[in-house]
Each structure stands twice: as structure tokens, then as C-alpha cells.
Length: 389
Ligand code: NZQ
Ligand code: ZN
Image 1 (cartoon, helix red, strand yellow):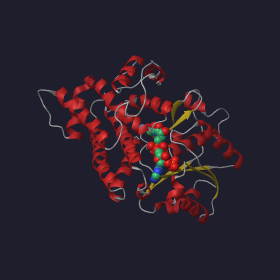
Image 2 (cartoon, helix red, strand yellow):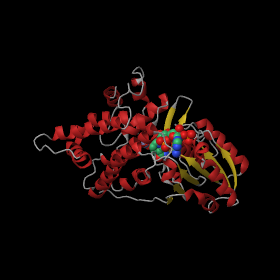
Image 3 (cartoon, protein in one colour):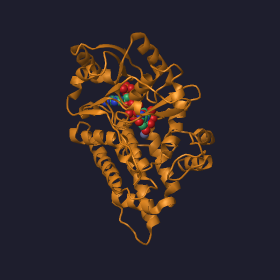
Image 4 (cartoon, protein in one colour):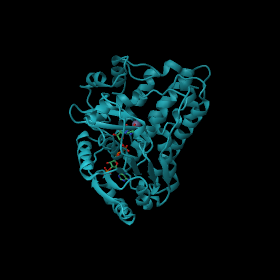
């Protein structure tokens, strides 16, 4: 196990009806709030009015900015920064999913910064301050409600880039599983793929002796595998929705990374798909992850055997570990397909004429490679995209 610091300061307020007290919680952290939301789902579900009522009841002054799109855009972030400065906002309240939360985090970083907020996403500057961000979560998926990252798309070049900093951890997150009853099945499934990907990025590691976190990862994966088919049949099954919602947070608040080095190549590769083609992040991951697995499993077949046996209940063939490993990969892909997700670029309606460009653009580390389990070159990334065709 490697040395680690684990600091997950987000206060989680979880359960039925909890969002009614959002105004009171906001009041502890700010006096003037930006109420930030997406394309209208919260107006249709009535959550918008509940939040307004709660803010008013707590006597909290607020301005609002809706219209965050999935794969949130830099231009709206810049608009939000201007608005917050003009209105002297001192807390961002993000009500929605990963896109709204990430947009809110980027605004929070931009308000106290003199330069262009994109500097934090392009790697030109490191954040030194931000406004606090609070969350009311409506979709279990990105894990942004407790993560240290924000992912924004710059329309100039369609670059989708992340910024990770401790400032990005929200101060509180209200999580009521009932708010997820209205999710369309496809969004539920995309969320599942993202949650599973966050765990698998951590699971496939070269760090030895990480038994506890292996077991925690397996528990989160098995919880998703069991409960997603249930909510696809019964969207208002509270207990299943609750399991999934809590899993989304634990998958990405870094508890599962303690003492180990994760991979993250599949995420970097996927960001090129959703950056250019505006597909849901989870759908892109359902396509990329199985292809990545097929490309790299030989690096540590035993780890893939463990994954197959413990997560997918594959019977271990001691004479054919490779066969066992491949069966685990096949079942991963089959699960994604069974819950209605695309598993090939063709399913996603992504043509193959820009694969070289995506492989080239995919964000690499200082040594020119992406990922840790296997350090991938541009050519490797291209091969993975070709495997995903
Ligand atoms: O915009 P509205 O109208 O609210 O509709 C949303 C949106 O269309 C809808 N929705 C959300 N809650 C709903 C609902 N519809 C009905 N009922 C509800 N309760 O769902 C759609 C998708 O929402 P979005 O916020 O885009 O989904 P998600 O949470 O999957 O976020 C995706 C974004 O997060 C980034 C992704 O790259 C992507 O841009 N990620 C952020 C991470 C982080 N900050 O830590 C990590 C992830 O790896 C990921 O990269
Ligand atoms: Zn993700």
C-alpha cells in the first residue's frame, strides 16, 4: 500500500425529503447565492420551486443562472463569473448533475481569479482560491458532489478538460434518492457506466497489497450491477435508488483510491468523444472501457482474473487464466449492453474518420503517455479506439 492523505470534507445530507432544509444549510456558508441549474428538468420535477421556497424561508438572497448543458461549456461559466462578481455572490448552489456541479465549481474558481478561468483547465495556472460550492444532486453518475474535479468543454476547439484541486470539493451535498425517480432509463444507465468506470479506473492498478480497497471497489461494483436492473424495471424503488446514489459518491470521493495508483486512461480517451461529439460521458465510457480492457489485460492477467471471479462470478479456470480474464471483460461489455448502453463507436453513431485526431488530442502526461496501469502512447490510444469501432 502506498502512503496517502485522505481528505473528503463534503458534508453529505442523505435521504427522503432532505432538500427541504437547503436554505438553512446555505445560510451557514454564504449570504448571497448563485442558484445554478441545467436545462429544465428541475422545473419539470418541482425541485426548482422547492429550492426557491427553502432559500426564501431561510431569508437567503439569491440570483439564478440556468441553462447548463450536459458536457458543460466554458462560455456559460464565464457568464456565471461575471454575474457573481456583479452581484457579490459568495456561494454557488449547484442543483442538478455532474454538468451543473462542474459548471458551478468552475465559476467558483473563476470569481476570485484575475486571469481566464480556462488557465486552470489548460494547466497554465493552479487555483489558489475559490468560492464555496454546495450541491443538491439529481443524478448519481459523475460523483462530482464530493470529488475534487471539474470537467469543462471549451467551444473553441471542442476541448474537454478537467481541473483537479482540493478547492473543488463541495462544502455540502444534499442527496435524496427520490429526486432520481424521474431519470430517463438511458441517463440511469449512463450514470451506472460512469460509476463503474470510476471504480474500475482505480481497481486496475499495479500497486500491490491493496486488499481492503480491492474489496471496497468490488462491493461498489456489485451494488451497481445488482441495483441498476431493478431501477430500470421499477424507477421508483427507493431502496435500489438509494444504493446507487450512495455508490456514486463512494466511487469518486477518493476513498477507493487510498494507498493505490489509479489508471484514468479510459476517462481521458472518453473526454475526446464527448468533447467532439457531445455524447453522454457514461455512454462514451461504456464504449471505451471494454476496449481498453482488451488492449491492456495481458499486463496483469491475475488482476483481471480476480475482477472476473469476484465481480462477475466467473468460474476460475486454473489452466486458462487468460480465458477467465477475457470472460470478465466480455461480461462487463454485455452488462453495459443489457442496460441499454452503446458498446461500440458505431452504436454511438461516431464515424471513424477522426480517430487519429482524437488519439493525438487525448491529454497526455509530461512523458507523452496516458494512463498508469499501462502507459499508452498516441498509437496505443488509436489502437484502442479502433478496437472500439
Ligand atoms: O439539464 P437538465 O434539464 O437538468 O437534465 C439533465 C441532463 O439532460 C438530466 N437530469 C439530471 N437529473 C435528472 C435529469 N432528468 C430527469 N430527472 C432528473 N432527476 O440528465 C442529463 C444529464 O445530466 P448531467 O449533469 O450531464 O449528467 P452527469 O451527472 O452524468 O454529468 C456528466 C458530466 O460530468 C463530467 C462528465 O464529463 C460530464 O461532463 N464528469 C465530472 C466528474 C467530476 N467532476 O468529478 C467526473 C466524471 O468522470 C465526469 O467526467
Ligand atoms: Zn467519469
